[in-house]
Length: 39
Image (cartoon, rainbow, N blue to C red):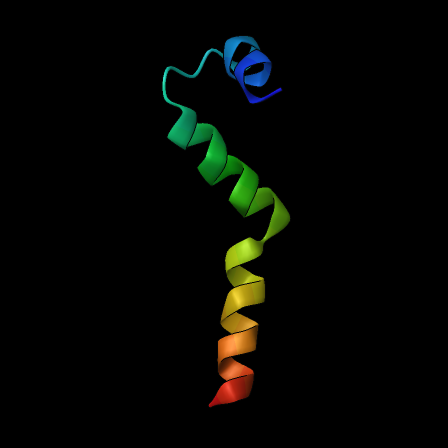
């Protein structure tokens, strides 16, 4: 669960974990590639 990971990592903000997860899974890169293909 996200809360367990938050406790384990000792980050006070859930948003920080979400940024790390987004960077790890490269969601922004995937969306950018889709948008680039449309242009």
